[in-house]
Length: 478
Image (cartoon, rainbow, N blue to C red; front, side, top):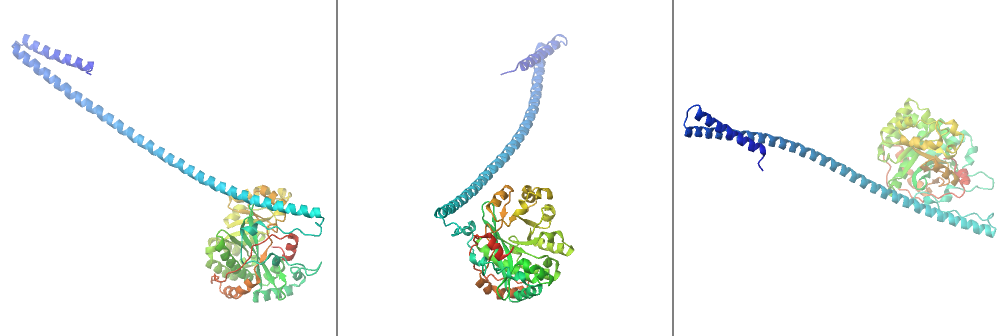
């Protein structure tokens, strides 16, 4: 549709051309034909000028519109890209949430199944007690031991039967095999230690560490025992002091490390997530010559560093000298993790311990549940697990002997437990020890030699002792 402004311009151009022709005819005296030609020519030039100016103006307007359209298209492309990124992020969150929900659901189902098994065991035990109470024989007939949760989870072929870990007293009221060496003098103990080292009578007892509340076996602690020429047992408390004074702890720790690596290799064939805790004495850490041999051996087996935890006493960490700190740093650089046991108080600096490579702290259950620790320590025991977790350290409650303690410890968010309630320390089978004795002695003399996988060990699963007090008296403290 023609605009009014265009019509107005056309009328003006006709009037201008007509006026020019009229002026030429009347004033200049030009003839009418010539005046008409001049007027028509002027009109033609005006029309051409107007058309060219309008074309230039339209081109400028179209260029501006095209530029605006380009900017709008670019903004729209950026917005589409932003929406695409947000949509991808939302889809990723949805997928991760679904997978996490499925994992949590599986974990909950597993826990419910475990609780169902425990309830069935409890029902059987209660029914057995009711039957014995009704028959009047509760005082004379002992309750048959129930199969522990650990028995069903770990079927290990290189540990002795449950009775072998808890020897019965020789006579009523008489000393047990673990109590006999306590009456010896230091000279006799030193002679027994030397003979045990030379004859390779160093035994490894394994005690499981379980997750709470599932009670799945996650780690094993290797407990060292020595046997004299009469096969009487010397516990760690019996011989460590004498062996450190005589400078023999380095050799003992070296042999124990070799046995622990052999056990760990055998365990990892069945379960890649299992680990072994190996105790190391302060004398070994502070002796450069002995530590160099142990470091060479650990260097040769650093592939197991993620599952091989070296355990030290709390007093050892509090009294670290320059040499001990350097040796500890050398182990941490090779990827080995540390654990602290024999904790006597809860004055703990988690940041400093985490910087040194500590990833586990074992605290006696009685110490955690002691109400007097609330005022004696800088942190409430119920907050200790959360504080240590911030620095990557797991809290392990040890020496657990009753179900009531487990219930109280769950309120403290304790992830791992160890004690006679779950299983007592159990030794390797004697035939297994004799079969690997020669290889152990040869490899201890050469620290850089890897333990042969052919020295495979055979074992049975750990079983919960029916009498925790008898087991502790027969085996001795861990």
